[in-house]
Length: 228
Image (cartoon, rainbow, N blue to C red):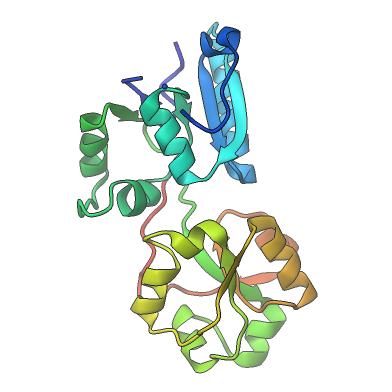
């Protein structure tokens, strides 16, 4: 049996875009999203399951949030790493959930069990190259209002999420008219080359230090906690 360190576990059961073989389907199915931290957590889950005597299959980089969530609900995967902010703001949107106990209870009603926190908060953030932010005097997201000429390229999923660009733009009254989507990894390369000036980040990304980025202060407290 998979240990309780896991994040979201299907109590009911099985369809994501790729299908396991009949032999694989009989084994615990671990899913992960298309970014590094999710894959690493999926590997942790897989190794814990192996230590518990299971023969798990880690289906890496299956897709984005909705793809993994639907696969969990249908029973095609048994577990995947998720974040409280994403659950409350995206997956269970409209229920006005804030406390972890409320999120847990709502998931139970959907046949899903959530583990305890894995011990860190990987919230969304907006980042820029340190030298660019320093030159323009930008320290907080609200400062972007004074720089409508900046090129903002945001990750594709962030562009469409309820806790992403639409609500961020409304909350901060950001005037940037042309905001485009791109892949998460490509955003960091674009910041490095100077072809874009700002993008969304995951606050635990190693690339923040690697590329010497300034994480802008969320001075209106737009983003909720994203406990893994």
